[in-house]
Length: 268
Image (tube, rainbow, N blue to C red):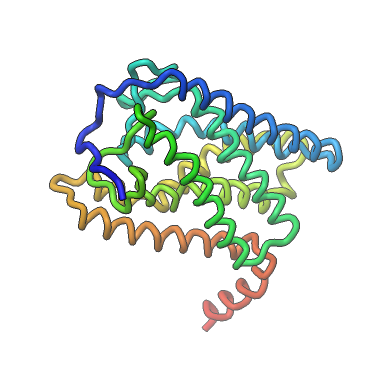
Protein backbone atom coordinates (compact mmCIF):
# COMPACT_ATOMS: atom_id res chain seq x y z
CA UNK A 1 0.00 0.00 0.00
CA UNK A 2 2.98 2.35 0.49
CA UNK A 3 6.73 2.58 0.06
CA UNK A 4 8.97 1.88 3.05
CA UNK A 5 9.56 4.70 5.50
CA UNK A 6 13.03 5.84 6.55
CA UNK A 7 14.26 4.25 9.78
CA UNK A 8 15.72 7.51 11.10
CA UNK A 9 14.58 11.11 10.91
CA UNK A 10 15.06 12.33 7.31
CA UNK A 11 16.89 15.50 8.30
CA UNK A 12 17.87 16.19 4.68
CA UNK A 13 14.23 16.84 3.67
CA UNK A 14 13.36 20.23 2.17
CA UNK A 15 9.96 21.84 2.62
CA UNK A 16 8.35 22.49 -0.81
CA UNK A 17 7.48 26.19 -1.08
CA UNK A 18 4.22 26.08 -3.07
CA UNK A 19 2.47 23.36 -1.00
CA UNK A 20 3.54 25.21 2.15
CA UNK A 21 1.87 28.38 0.85
CA UNK A 22 -1.30 26.46 -0.01
CA UNK A 23 -1.36 24.90 3.45
CA UNK A 24 -1.53 28.42 4.86
CA UNK A 25 -4.21 29.56 2.41
CA UNK A 26 -6.51 26.55 2.70
CA UNK A 27 -6.24 26.09 6.44
CA UNK A 28 -6.63 29.77 7.30
CA UNK A 29 -9.71 29.74 5.03
CA UNK A 30 -11.13 26.88 7.10
CA UNK A 31 -10.37 28.81 10.29
CA UNK A 32 -12.24 31.81 8.86
CA UNK A 33 -15.29 29.63 8.17
CA UNK A 34 -15.23 28.26 11.72
CA UNK A 35 -14.89 31.77 13.17
CA UNK A 36 -17.88 33.01 11.16
CA UNK A 37 -19.97 30.14 12.56
CA UNK A 38 -18.62 30.78 16.07
CA UNK A 39 -19.40 34.51 15.86
CA UNK A 40 -22.90 33.77 14.60
CA UNK A 41 -23.41 31.42 17.57
CA UNK A 42 -22.17 34.19 19.90
CA UNK A 43 -24.61 36.67 18.38
CA UNK A 44 -27.59 34.32 18.61
CA UNK A 45 -26.83 32.51 21.86
CA UNK A 46 -24.65 34.99 23.75
CA UNK A 47 -21.90 32.37 24.11
CA UNK A 48 -18.36 32.88 22.81
CA UNK A 49 -17.45 29.24 23.39
CA UNK A 50 -16.63 28.69 19.70
CA UNK A 51 -14.05 31.49 19.80
CA UNK A 52 -12.43 30.10 22.95
CA UNK A 53 -12.30 26.60 21.48
CA UNK A 54 -10.65 27.82 18.28
CA UNK A 55 -8.05 29.68 20.35
CA UNK A 56 -7.57 26.60 22.51
CA UNK A 57 -7.13 24.48 19.40
CA UNK A 58 -4.46 26.86 18.13
CA UNK A 59 -2.65 26.64 21.48
CA UNK A 60 -2.43 22.85 21.21
CA UNK A 61 0.15 23.42 18.47
CA UNK A 62 2.58 23.50 21.41
CA UNK A 63 2.05 19.74 21.79
CA UNK A 64 3.25 19.02 18.25
CA UNK A 65 7.00 18.59 18.95
CA UNK A 66 6.24 16.24 21.84
CA UNK A 67 4.06 13.89 19.81
CA UNK A 68 6.42 14.16 16.83
CA UNK A 69 9.44 13.03 18.83
CA UNK A 70 7.55 10.22 20.56
CA UNK A 71 5.60 9.16 17.46
CA UNK A 72 8.48 9.67 15.02
CA UNK A 73 7.21 12.36 12.68
CA UNK A 74 9.59 14.78 10.95
CA UNK A 75 8.92 18.24 9.52
CA UNK A 76 11.73 19.67 7.37
CA UNK A 77 13.70 22.53 8.85
CA UNK A 78 15.17 23.43 5.46
CA UNK A 79 12.91 25.77 3.50
CA UNK A 80 10.26 25.76 6.22
CA UNK A 81 8.50 28.79 7.64
CA UNK A 82 9.36 27.62 11.16
CA UNK A 83 7.10 28.76 13.99
CA UNK A 84 9.30 27.34 16.73
CA UNK A 85 11.77 24.55 17.35
CA UNK A 86 11.76 22.19 20.33
CA UNK A 87 13.44 18.86 21.09
CA UNK A 88 15.26 19.11 17.76
CA UNK A 89 11.98 19.32 15.82
CA UNK A 90 10.95 22.28 13.66
CA UNK A 91 7.24 23.09 13.66
CA UNK A 92 5.99 24.93 10.56
CA UNK A 93 3.75 27.94 11.11
CA UNK A 94 0.89 26.45 9.06
CA UNK A 95 0.28 24.04 11.94
CA UNK A 96 -1.42 26.88 13.86
CA UNK A 97 -4.45 27.08 11.52
CA UNK A 98 -4.46 23.27 11.18
CA UNK A 99 -4.82 22.88 14.93
CA UNK A 100 -7.22 25.84 15.17
CA UNK A 101 -9.81 24.24 12.88
CA UNK A 102 -9.09 20.52 13.25
CA UNK A 103 -8.90 20.55 17.04
CA UNK A 104 -10.70 23.77 18.00
CA UNK A 105 -13.26 23.91 15.19
CA UNK A 106 -14.17 20.25 15.44
CA UNK A 107 -14.37 20.59 19.23
CA UNK A 108 -16.95 23.33 18.69
CA UNK A 109 -18.89 21.04 16.33
CA UNK A 110 -18.74 18.18 18.84
CA UNK A 111 -19.87 20.51 21.64
CA UNK A 112 -22.91 21.59 19.63
CA UNK A 113 -23.75 17.95 18.91
CA UNK A 114 -23.47 17.10 22.62
CA UNK A 115 -25.84 19.99 23.37
CA UNK A 116 -28.38 18.75 20.84
CA UNK A 117 -28.20 15.22 22.22
CA UNK A 118 -25.79 12.69 20.76
CA UNK A 119 -26.27 9.00 21.49
CA UNK A 120 -23.47 6.63 22.41
CA UNK A 121 -23.63 5.18 18.89
CA UNK A 122 -23.55 8.68 17.46
CA UNK A 123 -20.46 9.46 19.52
CA UNK A 124 -18.58 6.51 18.03
CA UNK A 125 -19.79 7.61 14.60
CA UNK A 126 -18.32 11.05 15.28
CA UNK A 127 -15.05 9.39 16.29
CA UNK A 128 -14.97 7.59 12.94
CA UNK A 129 -15.86 10.77 11.03
CA UNK A 130 -13.09 12.80 12.67
CA UNK A 131 -10.68 9.94 11.93
CA UNK A 132 -11.56 10.10 8.22
CA UNK A 133 -11.06 13.87 8.22
CA UNK A 134 -7.62 13.31 9.76
CA UNK A 135 -6.71 10.88 6.96
CA UNK A 136 -7.71 13.37 4.25
CA UNK A 137 -5.73 16.06 6.05
CA UNK A 138 -2.53 14.02 6.28
CA UNK A 139 -2.24 11.76 3.25
CA UNK A 140 -1.91 14.41 0.49
CA UNK A 141 1.10 16.14 2.05
CA UNK A 142 2.86 12.82 2.60
CA UNK A 143 2.52 11.76 -1.04
CA UNK A 144 3.47 14.87 -2.99
CA UNK A 145 6.41 14.56 -5.42
CA UNK A 146 8.34 16.43 -2.70
CA UNK A 147 6.62 15.47 0.59
CA UNK A 148 5.91 18.15 3.15
CA UNK A 149 6.83 15.89 6.06
CA UNK A 150 7.49 12.24 6.81
CA UNK A 151 6.96 9.56 9.41
CA UNK A 152 9.88 7.25 10.13
CA UNK A 153 10.77 4.11 12.05
CA UNK A 154 8.80 0.87 12.26
CA UNK A 155 5.42 2.57 11.91
CA UNK A 156 2.43 0.18 11.99
CA UNK A 157 -0.75 0.30 9.90
CA UNK A 158 0.69 2.24 6.96
CA UNK A 159 -1.68 3.55 4.32
CA UNK A 160 -0.08 5.73 1.62
CA UNK A 161 2.79 6.56 3.99
CA UNK A 162 0.37 7.53 6.78
CA UNK A 163 0.48 5.41 9.97
CA UNK A 164 -3.21 4.98 10.73
CA UNK A 165 -2.64 4.65 14.47
CA UNK A 166 -2.43 8.45 14.67
CA UNK A 167 -6.15 8.72 13.99
CA UNK A 168 -6.90 6.85 17.22
CA UNK A 169 -5.77 9.85 19.28
CA UNK A 170 -6.06 12.74 16.79
CA UNK A 171 -9.79 12.15 16.27
CA UNK A 172 -10.39 11.98 20.02
CA UNK A 173 -8.70 15.29 20.83
CA UNK A 174 -11.56 17.58 19.72
CA UNK A 175 -14.14 15.19 21.19
CA UNK A 176 -12.47 15.17 24.60
CA UNK A 177 -12.00 18.95 24.60
CA UNK A 178 -15.69 19.34 23.75
CA UNK A 179 -16.48 16.91 26.58
CA UNK A 180 -14.62 19.09 29.09
CA UNK A 181 -16.44 22.18 27.79
CA UNK A 182 -19.81 20.41 27.93
CA UNK A 183 -19.44 18.99 31.44
CA UNK A 184 -17.99 22.23 32.83
CA UNK A 185 -20.43 24.57 31.08
CA UNK A 186 -22.33 25.53 34.29
CA UNK A 187 -19.03 26.77 35.75
CA UNK A 188 -17.31 28.21 32.68
CA UNK A 189 -19.60 31.18 32.17
CA UNK A 190 -18.66 34.73 31.23
CA UNK A 191 -14.96 35.47 31.37
CA UNK A 192 -14.30 32.11 33.03
CA UNK A 193 -15.02 30.53 29.64
CA UNK A 194 -11.56 31.77 28.64
CA UNK A 195 -10.19 28.94 30.80
CA UNK A 196 -11.17 26.66 27.92
CA UNK A 197 -8.06 27.86 26.07
CA UNK A 198 -5.51 26.29 28.46
CA UNK A 199 -7.91 23.43 29.24
CA UNK A 200 -8.01 22.55 25.53
CA UNK A 201 -4.21 22.41 25.45
CA UNK A 202 -4.06 20.23 28.55
CA UNK A 203 -6.86 17.92 27.39
CA UNK A 204 -5.26 17.40 23.98
CA UNK A 205 -1.96 16.44 25.60
CA UNK A 206 -3.68 14.08 28.03
CA UNK A 207 -5.68 12.43 25.23
CA UNK A 208 -2.53 11.70 23.25
CA UNK A 209 -0.88 10.19 26.32
CA UNK A 210 -3.93 8.08 27.16
CA UNK A 211 -4.16 6.52 23.72
CA UNK A 212 -0.71 6.62 22.12
CA UNK A 213 1.48 5.52 25.04
CA UNK A 214 1.82 1.87 23.89
CA UNK A 215 2.96 2.88 20.41
CA UNK A 216 5.29 5.58 21.71
CA UNK A 217 7.07 2.97 23.77
CA UNK A 218 7.07 0.36 20.99
CA UNK A 219 8.44 2.80 18.40
CA UNK A 220 11.26 3.95 20.65
CA UNK A 221 12.27 0.76 22.44
CA UNK A 222 15.70 -0.53 21.43
CA UNK A 223 15.33 -3.26 18.83
CA UNK A 224 11.78 -2.22 17.93
CA UNK A 225 10.11 -4.37 15.26
CA UNK A 226 7.01 -4.16 13.10
CA UNK A 227 5.45 -6.99 15.07
CA UNK A 228 5.92 -5.06 18.30
CA UNK A 229 4.53 -1.80 16.89
CA UNK A 230 1.52 -3.57 15.37
CA UNK A 231 0.73 -5.18 18.72
CA UNK A 232 1.06 -1.75 20.33
CA UNK A 233 -1.25 -0.29 17.68
CA UNK A 234 -3.88 -2.87 18.59
CA UNK A 235 -3.50 -1.88 22.24
CA UNK A 236 -3.84 1.80 21.38
CA UNK A 237 -6.94 1.11 19.29
CA UNK A 238 -8.51 -0.62 22.29
CA UNK A 239 -7.52 2.26 24.55
CA UNK A 240 -9.06 4.73 22.11
CA UNK A 241 -12.34 2.82 22.19
CA UNK A 242 -12.15 2.73 25.98
CA UNK A 243 -11.59 6.48 26.20
CA UNK A 244 -14.49 7.06 23.80
CA UNK A 245 -16.70 4.81 25.95
CA UNK A 246 -15.77 6.82 29.03
CA UNK A 247 -16.57 10.04 27.20
CA UNK A 248 -19.96 8.61 26.26
CA UNK A 249 -20.76 8.11 29.96
CA UNK A 250 -20.30 11.85 30.46
CA UNK A 251 -21.89 13.40 27.36
CA UNK A 252 -24.12 10.94 25.47
CA UNK A 253 -27.88 11.48 25.75
CA UNK A 254 -28.30 7.88 26.87
CA UNK A 255 -25.53 8.30 29.45
CA UNK A 256 -27.94 8.38 32.40
CA UNK A 257 -28.91 4.76 31.75
CA UNK A 258 -25.25 3.78 31.41
CA UNK A 259 -24.30 5.59 34.62
CA UNK A 260 -27.09 3.84 36.51
CA UNK A 261 -25.86 0.49 35.19
CA UNK A 262 -22.31 1.27 36.30
CA UNK A 263 -23.45 2.39 39.76
CA UNK A 264 -25.47 -0.81 40.13
CA UNK A 265 -22.47 -2.93 39.16
CA UNK A 266 -20.24 -1.06 41.62
CA UNK A 267 -22.78 -1.47 44.41
CA UNK A 268 -22.78 -5.23 43.91
